[in-house]
Image (cartoon, rainbow over all chains, first blue to last red; front, side, top):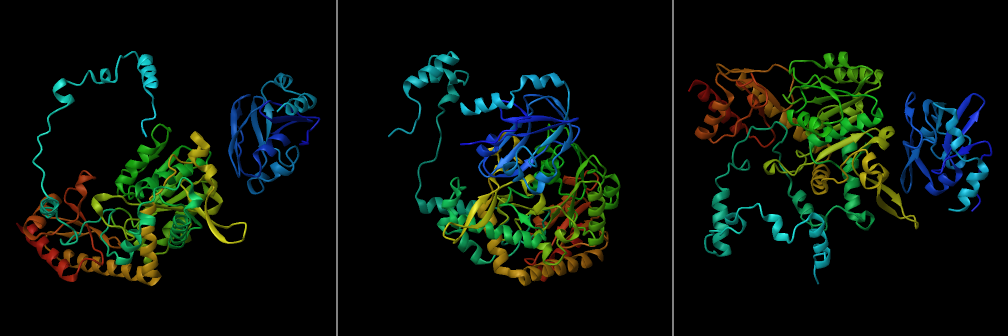
Amino acid sequence: MEYRFDEKARYAKTHEWVRVDGGEVVMGISDYAQNKLSDVVFVELPVTGTQLKGGTACMVIESVKAAEEVFAPVSGEVTGRNGKLEKTPELLNTDPFGEGWLVKLKLTDPKELDALMDAAAYRAYVATL
Amino acid sequence: MSFIPNTDADRAQMLAAIGVDSVSDLFRDVPKEHLFPRLVLPSAVSEQEILAELDSLSRQNADPGRTPCFLGAGAYRHFIPSVVDFVLSRSEFYTAYTPYQPEISQGTLQAIFEYQSLIARLTGMEVSNASHYDGATATAEAVIMSLNVSQHQRKRVLLSAGVHPHYRAVVRTYTQGMGLDIHDDKDTEATIERLAVLCDSQTACVVVQCPDFFGRMVPPSTITALAQKVHACGALLVVAVNPVSLGLLVPPGELGADVVVGEGQALGNALSFGGPYLGFFAFRRDQIRRSSGRIAGETVDRAGTRGYVFTLSTREQHIRREKATSNICTNQSLNALAAAVYLVSLGPRGLQRVAELCWHKAHYAAERIAKLPGYTVDTAEFFHEFVIRCPRPAETINRRLFDQQGIIGGFDLGQEFPGKEHEMLLCCTEMNSRGEIDKLVEALEEAGNA
C-alpha cells in the first residue's frame, strides 16, 4: 500500500501530524490514519481556546466502522478549527494534509516539535506496521 | 453440559487470590439460622385453586377498567383498540430481546423505523430515536444531548417548574456529578417569559412542558418567542409534550423546539402500575451526531431491495465507550410498537377525535366543579387536566370519593408541592362517561360539605 506523506510535517506515533506554515501551526491526521479509519462521517473538533496537552486525547473522529480518539501531538491552545469538516468530513479522506486539516494551534513549547518524527522517519515507521 | 464457566481450578485460584478457603467462607457473616431458614409454606394446591386465589387477591385492587378514574399526572387511561394487543402478542415481537445482531431481525427494525416515522410526524421533528425508558429518562437524555451540543462548555440548565416533578428529579439523578447549574424549577408560578430572560450564553438548554404538569397550555406564540431567545443564546429548546394533545395542538417542531420528548404511555399502552412505559425522543437532523439512543434507518441491500439497519451506532456506548452520547443503548421496543400500532389504527383523524373528546369532557367537568360551593378551578387554558382548589385537603376529599363512591379522584398536589395540600389535579379522557363525571361532581360536593 502506497501512502501519501507531507515532507514538511512532523509526525507522532499515533499518526497525527503538525506543520509550521509561516506563523501558523496546523494539525491533522496522516494518510495512513485516514486509510485505516475508512470513510470518515463525523469529526468533533475541540472548541477554540481549549488547551491541548501533548500525548492526550483531544477529539474523536467517527468513521463508518469506528470511533477513534485523536491525540494531540504537541501541547498548545486551539486558535482555529476547520469548519468545513462539519458538512464535508470526507475531506479527511481525500486530502488529509491539505483541506482535511483539523485545528490550528498556538504552541506551548516549540521544542516539543523536536520529539516528533520527520517525514522520512515516519515513512520508515509506517513501513514496519 | 455444564453452564458454569469456571473450572474447579479457576475457583481455587480465585479463592486463593482473595484469601479464603472455600466459597461457603464468603457467607460466614450471615447468621446460621438465616443461612438456610426453614420455609414455612402452605401445602401445594391445584392450578385451579391457585388461580381462584390469585383472582380473589386481584379483585382487592381498584382496577381503573372498572372504577371511575380521574387520575392523570403523567400516566393516562385511554381506550386501547384490540389490534394493539393482537400485534404485540405475536411471538416474533413479544419474545425477542434487543437485537444484538440487529440486521437479522428485519421485522423488529422495520417496526422501530415505523414508530420513529410516526413520532417524527406527530412532533413535527425530522428524526426520532427508537425510544427511551419513559418520559423522565427521555427528558434527561435531552438535557445531556444539549450538553453534548455545547461540547460541555455550557453548564446551565433552565428547567421550568411546569415540567413533571418526576422528570425534573430524574434529570438531576442522571446529571449528578457533571457540575451542572440546574435551576428555576421551584417557583410554580414563574412564567415562560421569565425563563426566556434567564437564558444566557452559559445556558445549554431550556426545558418546558406543554401542556405543563398542571395541565396549563402554553400559547404557540409564547413557545415561538422562547425558541427565538433560546437560539439567540446558542442554547437548545427542549419541549416535553403529551402526545395525545398533539391531536389538537400545534406540534412543538413547528414552534422552534430543538428536541421534543415525552411519555408515550398514552399511545396504546396500559397503565400497568406505572410501567413499563416508553419515552419518545425527537430532534432536528443537524444534531443527529449528538443525539442519544438507537436509531433504525431504511436503506437498500446490494440487490437494491429495501432493508433496515441500526444506523449512527458510533454515537453509542458499545463503540464509543465512555465518550458515548448516552449511557443507554437499548429501547422500549414492545411499548414503542404498541404506540406505533395505536397511532396507525387511529390515524390522524382518530387521534384528533380522541384529543377532542378529552378536551370536551375535561372542560365539562371543570365547568360543573367551578359552580360547586367551596371549590375553585384554575382559570388557565388547559387540555384535559386542570387544578381545582378544594374546601378540605385533597387527601381527605380523595379518601371520601373512594370510600363512599368508589371513585378514584385526582392527584393530590400536596404530595409533590408543599403548600398545595388543598389542590387537586383532575384529568378526564375519552374513557370518562358523562354519567361518571356527573357522579364525580356530586361526590365532590358531598365530600366538600362532609
